Image 1: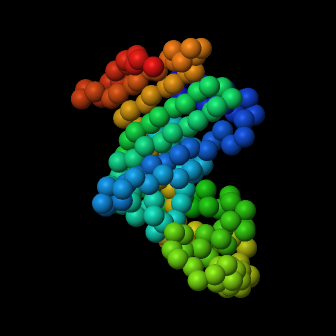
Image 2: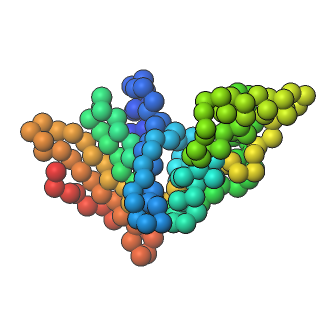
Length: 188
């Protein structure tokens, strides 16, 4: 409920990319890995984003679904940290989202071997041209089998509200063994 309130306020403030979130995962060696992705849905179950399952983030989530998210809305002096576990969304959800993407983004999903080494920009452009030819006579580009959504089911939230003299408000919510959320105030 608190996240929904702050997110709606970030949207209403017309901030640039209020749906941008940092997703942090870890490599098998325990090396942290973070990147910005866009939230495409949030509900009682969790936070949804879409990507190539063969990307670095997809492979890291397959090995260890534990991850964290961070939303930063500097103009509002707010930050939200979230921890939880990722799981793939149903294929039908991924299909529906993919069908609504611009055609260029759909072609790009087929053409880009995300996170893999390319010899040159020309190699990527050739892959795009090949995908455009492949789907030239198709009205609806199908979703690639290695592309879809993840839902991060949270078990930890921290809401940070900036205050004068660096005496910020920090509220932490953690799911207890009974499934209920416990709230604590943290020192700034």
